[in-house]
Length: 473
Image 1 (cartoon, rainbow, N blue to C red):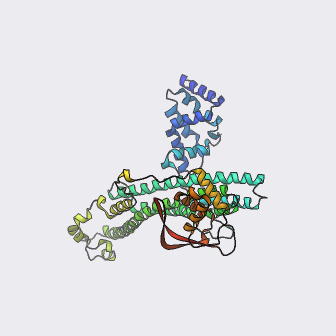
Image 2 (cartoon, helix red, strand yellow):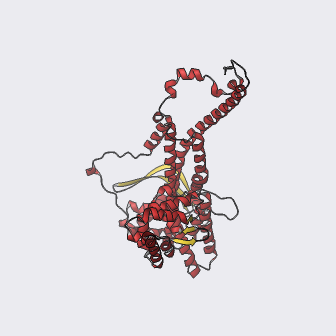
Image 3 (cartoon, rainbow, N blue to C red):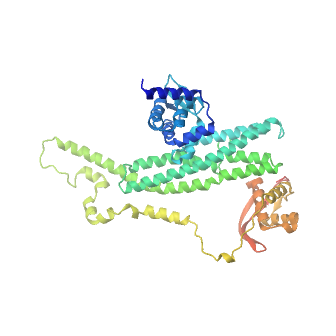
């Protein structure tokens, strides 16, 4: 056995006996992230199974790690060391596979957005079921002060935070996918790719049906579910807020996180609108592609019949039945002579590029140049002040019928805080009010009004409150 082989065995044995600090090991893994990205690519291409053939990692280790002068890497990143330190959960010698830690896969996807996976309808349904299960357990437990309640709320808060992270990540992934579709569309029009209209159509269809629409449904506050007893994600969170109506701090915290999740609805909507523009053009191209393919296949069949007939002077004339049957072949010679320049129109000048530019222009914020000496900074509300207003909002005895919520809250806040009142207090009061009040109880009016407080003012549409029976809002 060569010296190199002995050295590798020694490193493997030494790595197996060594417990390494997780932080140091992760840093070393990230130094060689390209090796682990290859493992992640295998996982993504094989139905997200965490099992990877052992031989793949051994080949990567020998090629990219063992040959380096990095002694720590060659010792710490051996197969045995990573298994001993729980980076690889299991090394199945019989199957010849290694099982990657779930957190390692998520970490690799987190640092490389192009390798991240979109959330499918199945993923969203699992999240929804988890929330509903926790809610049903909380609703049936003995009370807010019980040990079971605290355990369930810990699980709920962890799930809510994880969901917020997943939804945000999902929006980033969908945006990358939309940009990828756009680049493939441009390359196709420049004849710089093998992607045809049918390939793009299929990719867009899958993206719509499996990922974009489920994302919209999950974050849509107005979404309703069919099936007895089933609640949407938003409905479950509303139940938690109502359950904690007598605990303003908890209710407001849940309300803020709910708003954070549902606010991504607008981002997903923008991705959808961008994809729909390309979808319409690709759908037309695909229909043309399929019709041309069908016509030429039929033409090939007609030519095949004439090929071995031992007949002379047989030509494809314009009165041939197959040519008259399809509009695809009509006036091709005429179009070639008259519309050559138009048919050769370069892709960068096509209408879809103009429409995409126009949409981007509409979404671009135009900042006007102003004289900064004449501009004053709006005051910021402190966390302590916001907490005081939330507590006031939760303890306030609300009227059952309010014609103008903005005016009402301003009047009541002025009574409660007298000379300390500022217009930013009204914003905090409105935010707390809408977080705890069922949207079915208030109505919006198209009438516009203005509140002026010192040198600040606020334009708003009138919103009224109407509660049928006495209740605490």
